[in-house]
Length: 133
Image (cartoon, rainbow, N blue to C red; front, side, top):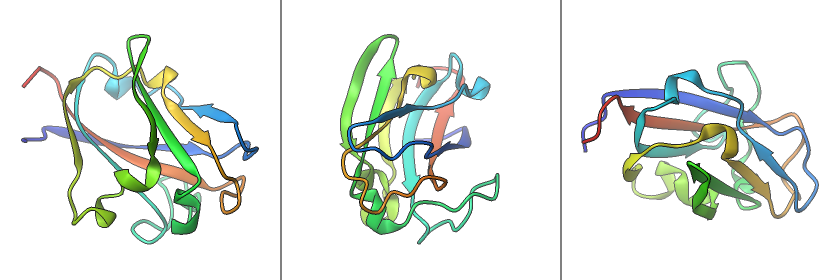
């Protein structure tokens, strides 16, 4: 699939209580865009985010689930963060077709906080196009 644009999006862990959810902040660049791929990272791939926050360790990735919402429907529900890390999947980015993500309603769920410290971030790259492909 041909990616036209990409943006890295950080979600800083503010609360690591088991069973808690956290939503992404608004990302104007993704409004009315068509997401074609999603990639996640641990500190093994990216040490710090663009805000100089430490990225979550690989051991913490096992305790996080990802929820992606399109309109008001959760279409990717409780996807293990670990599976979105391209380095864990022969370098393959998870590809989707024309997802119009509602980023403000999408986020993460903390299933096991053992290695998910407050103050670290999960980091994603969203690959998107302006028009459907």
